[in-house]
Length: 323
Image (tube, rainbow, N blue to C red; front, side):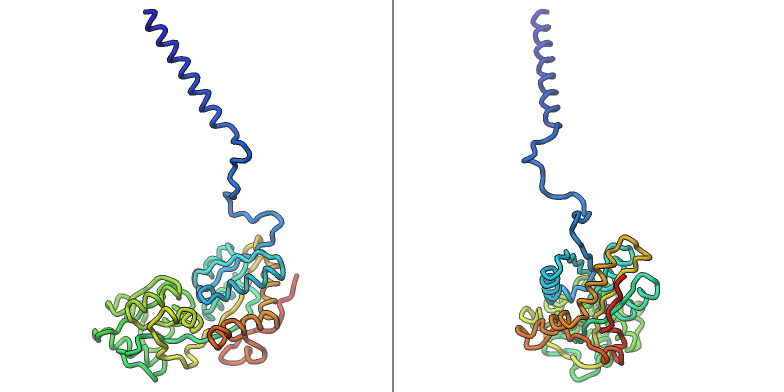
């Protein structure tokens, strides 16, 4: 019995020792072991942050990085870009999760402003959409108008013409909106006649750069903005098949989120950034971007009075009034 009592006593001591060790582990860790990383997305006090939702084409071309570099160095503002396509960018802005959008889908932009979520729209630049595809052009669309080309791609694809595949962005950005508009002008109901119409039509569900890479892998046609195509050209065997026509105009705009809808947005800095984009300095940066590498600008800045007339029909020079 004494032996058993001794064992029990030793066990009790061991248990108390273990509890003491665990109690020490759950206490405050030494300061030097504390993680230096924040566990919240709340902006750091004293840092002026501007959150911008934007189309992927501006990111893929590298223009966003250049805007960020110059503007942050000039103002000290922390520019935070979220590249996700026009449709998703506008949805993010409707929730008040950003202060500003940079987008390229005029019809969706107009709806965003008319619904009261966007204010002070300013068009900043343009380029063109292009239809790219294999150099062999299996659908035979060279020298056609964009609408005629889409009709021919549809006819060839649904008739299982060898080598005819079209890769769509499929994620509701400005490029996808333009594609759907071209299908509509060609006489097709996108939901009923294009989607799920056969293996010839492939939805990438990705950004423009990734869509170009997928189209290249499939030796397929796709609709791209010219800037992103030029940025990825060295990785592609695809060539521009159709690069002209008013139907291919691609206009970019900056729109601030309405503080009456979302009082916490950084309306002041959104105004400052828009005014910088439409300033001579901002336009010169945009107009020079890509010249050295590609021999032409990837985006053409807009100036008055041209921007106020067809085919642009927008405001590009009038500064946004500060509060």
